[in-house]
Amino acid sequence: MRGFLMGGADIIPGVSGGTVALILGIYQRLVTAVSHCDWHLLRLVGQRQWKEAAEHLDLRFLLALGMGILAGIVCLAGLMHYLLAERRAYTLAVFFGLILGSSAVVGQMIKSEGPRHHFRCLGLVLLGTWCAYWLVGLQQWHPHDSTGYYFFCGALAICAMILPGISGAYILWLLGAYESVTSMIRIRRVLALDWTEQELIRLTVFVVGCLVGLIGFSKVLRVLLTKARASTLSVLCGFMLGSLRRVWPFQQEILASRSDLKHREYAAIWPPTWDSQVTVCLLFGLAALMGVVVVEWWVKKYHDSENGR
Image (cartoon, rainbow, N blue to C red):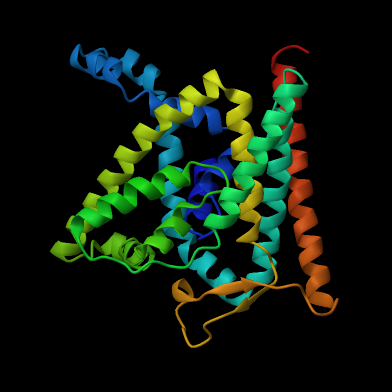
């Protein structure tokens, strides 16, 4: 179920699966498990020590999560498309509340070691906020149509996908590959294996790029979370805060002539009047924020009870 929710978030330009992983309390376990794709794992496999290899990789966790993510991507694509097209303000209000609440949760994880360290962490939060705010405000680049470009898109998007606050789907949109990739993974085409030879090659290259980027970047994240946890969490918290620009509920469409949701561009606006839509968005956002607070409280209570506190 956690993977299913991550997959549903990953297909939305502007929402990060890494944010969902943080909200659900599995982020560090995910990064650690993926980073264990290393030479030690290959040595265990070469020696046919299957049980030790599975434990080193946390295979049961990755398989369950991976199947959930895949199911979420395939099953929720149509629903998310409808919600963003027909109920955009309400949907974004929920995501705004979720991300804002989870930003506060991540902020509580930052343990400063003194006044100087506290100000450094605050500076990193502000830097991460500015970087994400700038990134989500970029316009779409002109897409390329080469197989190697899909490898690059996959490697870059998957890195963003596991970073809280930076959406892998949005990176794909910036690179001009979002439409072609999502069109190849629609549930009808997947079930019917309805791909041309060129599409199958591009999809395979894209998946390989995702695997390479995921394994390489997860190792970097694991080291950062181990050696400089407070500083890393500060940057991640800033990323999440800066990404709120992308999911601001009140938006105005810039290019109204484009009928395809994937190609539409929106600009954030301040609502001209306080009407029923503003009230409902506020309630949805607050409900989502409180949901994060309740889940975080429940997780802490569960862990405390398991530890005998």
